[in-house]
Length: 221
Image (tube, rainbow, N blue to C red):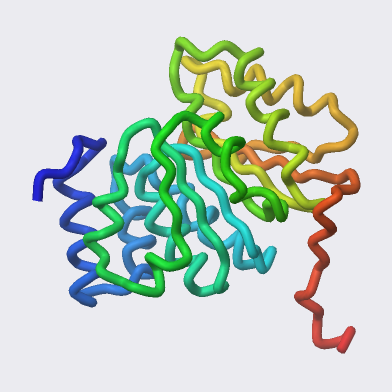
């Protein structure tokens, strides 16, 4: 199959075939990606767990990669809707998984981030979003800041936006996050590994409702 080029294409194809052939589970693959010594994927187990904790119903990602595979399976587990958007058409990689249930819950949109606003996929609000398309020296801090703010109105209260490369010095994502921390309507932090995984929690009310904590301790039950 002639698939479009992507970072570590051969390894990704081999990993997808391993999952499709049930040689390993998606969970086991997450640990493999984390343990790769050179890996830029150590943040993916965190991306996998946050939507589960939120019991997310709608998950959005901008920027296709290994994270897409993890979020596909999370959406399937939660019976949620997952939308991935990228400038390049990487949808054929998802086809390698040959999982009908996964295909039903996943939508791939070819286009830039603005393409999402031309669809109805976010019309019921978003629980979790991963933005991984700011890692360029050509992207200014101001453009990153404005891009994140354009998505915030679609987030439910307590919804989470995750952003990659938030402490990497050669990009301006870190500078955009400095501005975001001044907004009292947000909680903002960066995990200090794998170039930084930034987490933004929307505190203010949302027309799409509120994500409640449903994970009660035994003493509360």
